[in-house]
Length: 310
Length: 294
Image (cartoon, rainbow over all chains, first blue to last red; front, side, top):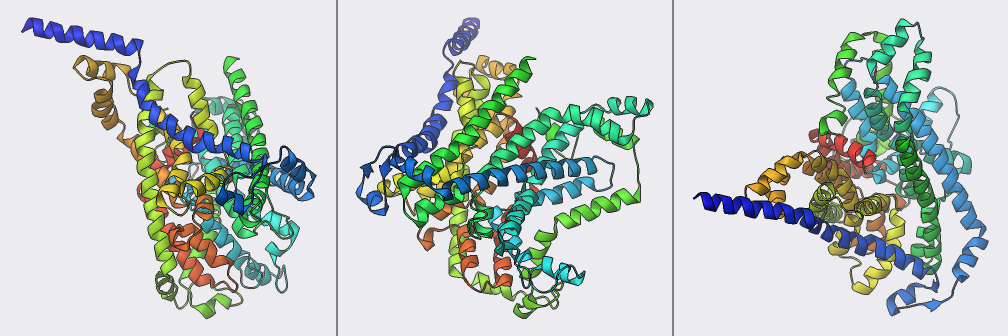
């Protein structure tokens, strides 16, 4: 009896020791790593390799295209449309991220106040982020409809406009419209992240400041903003990633128009591939598309590490 | 970070105490918050209201804020649309398949990443995090080329794999904190009692981590339900398209029937809205964990 128990204990001890030497829990990681390598890493590398080939619809079916070296890159980098798409991507992302963070901060601050039912209000606002973007894009198109849209109905009622205004038909207003729709979608996510950040600021700081006679604005500037800085930073980075990835909202609201005014790089790459069937050239666009988030995320993680060290 | 500290509904004890202390109860602030919330919900309200309007009410100037008289005709008309029904079925199959695949791959991986400490772990973690930054177009394009050769275009398998490619890394990011919060002693005690690494994972770690698994499954399902880019590029056959792509097809035709389109949108949005209402706690913690942890 006792020997059996001893044996078992010894065996268990041996097993624990073995587990320390070779962590066989690591095997649980293998399927996921293989899957991600096969479905993400390999396709990305394949995509880069294809950017050196001339590939149309026939080559997709038949097999390999013709090796053209950097010809696709030269072709794309000479195209004003490509540079325009890159520029619009950057300005669309910058406008959306800045405005989303501002709206998110205002919402988070508003619902920090002791308001009856604020949890329900926050949850309702979060619906804007939860709802699939394909659907919200359709709804925004309908809200902004020139003849029968709700926005124009309201503006006519208040006498601000007279007749029909086709917001999505003009370059500047179409750009503003897709930014507005994107901010509407992204700000609630920012609000949730910033709320978590605000709740972690010790209330004693505010009480001390109030004793010292600091105004609401002073407390915001001198306590909230510095304490919230890391969370603000993370939120802005995350919203940047999401915004730079945007496709549905613009593809469905404007299709990149009018006249390319809202044609961001992902929409441009999609068109090259699936509308014009220039897969090699599209691969150039998507490869370049990867550069900006890669550089920024390296900078981001670098600065986080630096902050953690200090 | 534990699950409870990030849910908006509970909040930390400190903040609720301090909230009570600084009760303002100014009606002005309440009215402002209410107005902001209502203003924010206008697009969703307008979608639902429009879907109950008769066709001639769509063209009313000024547009009426209520569907008078209300009608369910748009719903009847879109539910007779075979493409949309097929699309909903496709979306369901793809979303369930993606969730199961993400569950099978991500849960064990997250456990391993939380428990094992070897040098290459940080590299793997970084890769899983970096993968989430890749625009879907970047994967849709090579996947279309590869899937064409493998015969996976216009198949459920292809669409599930494509969706899971982005769902698995996100799911791992969401799940890992749950396993990190699991005390090491619990697992070691189980091993002393005769469990090996795998049975300890199955019998001890998994049951404790059910909230994390629900969160992860919910986020995966909702993501796949609303997915558009893979559906658009990898399902060229109408019979295989998810509901989001069918919806997009309804808008690009001339003379959009807005009440029908909004009814169809409401139907497609309904499962996501229902999940959010019933599993809000899990969704919110998933958003914050997935977003801030790595």
